[in-house]
Length: 102
Image 1 (cartoon, one colour):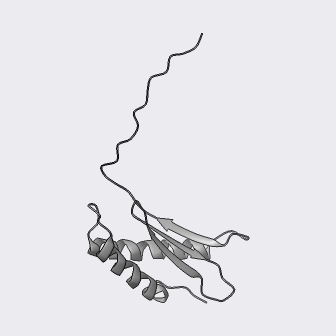
Image 2 (image 1 turned 120 degrees about the vertical axis):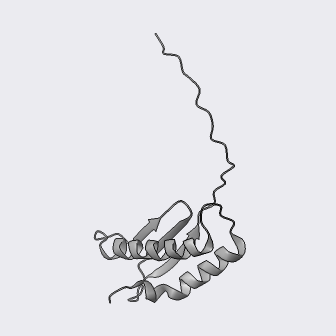
Image 3 (image 1 turned 45 degrees about the horizontal axis):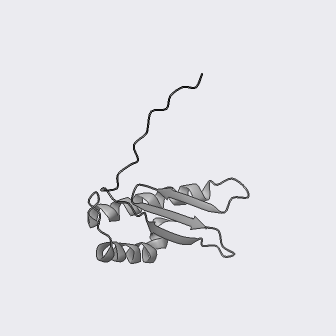
């Protein structure tokens, strides 16, 4: 079975609806999210189709979205779309200088 982005239209539509309703993202407007999701789905399909023997998943991600296609008993893989939680206000821990030991 040839996999296409259109095969996962329902999952993407549900994810976009949730993104539009629940996710606040300063980096990605809803229209940009649709484009990113389509691009990530294409990459996940490519990763899934070209995976090594014994591996069950095709994964693609960017800073805000993760797409996972997982092998099932049927022809069509299961599709999971996650929104990565991130805050632009999160402060990174400062590195402290270490002193060399003699």
